[in-house]
Image 1: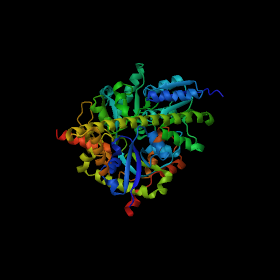
Image 2 (image 1 turned 90 degrees about the horizontal axis):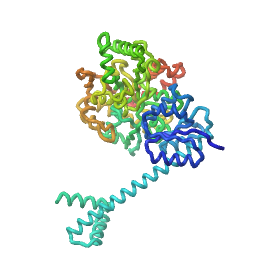
Image 3 (image 1 turned 180 degrees about the vertical axis):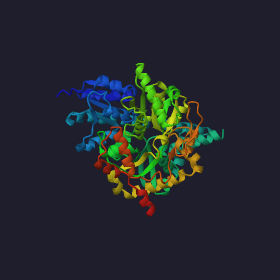
Image 4 (image 1 turned 90 degrees about the vertical axis):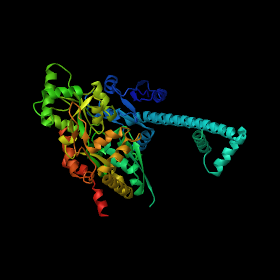
Length: 194
Length: 349
């Protein structure tokens, strides 16, 4: 079945919006419109007349969007939040992933399910990617801190690199603290005593 | 007593004060709670996150709790409120330019809402006669006391919000910008946004909420309706903590400390002095007028946090006037059930 639906993606995060667009395109949806501006939403929706609106929960204009769908006469066809009481698990998954969907009244839920699933999995994938990136960044920061502290120990105690590292590790183990915490304390102390 | 961990969602507004005071002053801890506050960006999010239990409870607009419980507006998520979080706190702000225009045509004291509404009506008809676009006012959520304050104020001069004047929904964080850019001519919102608009020099406060709707049931503490009884221990502890926070926040010697807590970057991220002035009811007005002392500008006292089922009657009547609902006796009954005076039970314990 050619899923001939017009989908509007409202997401201030350009990268994630692109990832979602790719996912939906792979699933066979062709009429995709991306919007990142939180202003001018009303005009955009009037102009594009979408069947489905996907919105990032971090976008503060969600309340305005919901209200526009409900009471405004600007929208040609009534649009309601996609809430399927018989399948609250997918709603839970969507809210947890950080995405919400609004659909044109009368659109069959079977047609909406694959779109929502794609958005949920792409939102989750994006979050995982961001978490991994943050993790990698913080590991790199820790590494730099430890190297700096090692340098201080080498200089002050006249030790080799390996010896300085071993001393810091031993101290961390004895004090049941993380190596990076010991390193931070060393740097703070060295700066105070400068 | 084992500590209970609770996640409670809030919007960065002064009326989240009791939640913030309970969490950040050690009061919650003393009541056996690890109270984690989660800042959010929209009321729709708070409703949905509460509904799927990503949150245990949430800071909520009283009319939004009613709409969500009754299923007005497409989503049914029944809520119950064992406590109110405040009364009042709103204000109606005009752009500097519209304030000047309204002041120029006012036939009497602008502080009188019927005079100011009449002045607005004069402006509306003169704009119509000159072929200018209709005025636009913003509220921060459709089902809110802000919408109803605007509606009822305009009705004093026979104006219809949504017909004679456009209503647009703007998130609180964008209110000042929308006023400055001329996207809207005025807005009604909670603290600190009106004060921020005056301080930024782009707006003038025309009326405080108390001038239009005294003892306005503004925000409540929403739980999922089915959780209130099921999780009675958690509800009781959070109630106890908030009752103590209310007592603490009602003592004016604690206002500087409360203002500092609210001002924190992960709370409202605003200037402590500005928040303290709001807590004291010292309201800057703009438009060349001196600050005004409004003692009940925002209320957190013991009487203010008692949920009264009569609030449902008042709010449904306001919603009906705005055309949001037909207040049938059945709906009134269901809406009354949201306001559960648990605080009194607590006091009797």
